[in-house]
Amino acid sequence: MKLFLILFTSLVTFNSFEQNPNSSFQKSKISSFTQDDSTLKVLYDTTNSPGQHPAYLINGQFASDGILQTSNFNAASIENINIVKKDTIVNNVKYYGIIEIKAKVNYIIKPISLAQLKLKFTDLKNSKTIFLVDNEIINTVDYSNYFVNENGILKIVVEKVRNQKEGLELNIVKLFTKSDNNIRKSKEIMIRGSKDLSLNQ
Image (cartoon, rainbow, N blue to C red; front, side):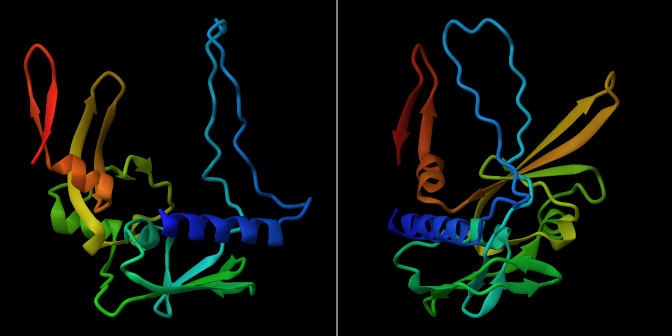
């Protein structure tokens, strides 16, 4: 929780430091709903719109969003965090500021692209696939360039969606990270009966 607050504060600092009135950053429209609403509302999620993001360096190495999302850092795995208010360009992408994370020696990151992960752990090969990490859709141009931390993955669930009428045939690959919440859920035993019960092992 403490780490989350540190990273959140860092992001807020960068946004306030770099943001300007001419920024192309788009925010999702927020609608308030009440019980009296009778009209169906359709919202288009624009949270994946490009914005001003800092670069992350883990032990001096650039870390993509996927690496960061699947690394499950906690206070025990981090030695220190340093914020540098200096823009940088990595792989022809401009980042607004740098957040340097120094992980402890025994914390090992094993990068793997989603395309490599698909070939290594599933039988899907070249079939159409959508990836989710902790139920968040990964919206990227090329899965070959989107890296996650293999050591941070707890479980992979593959769902095959087929709809002949719609001409739809794709696979959904769900990655669950080694977060405290996911680990706790993985240890629960569901008992079916008149009432569903869950027991922790």
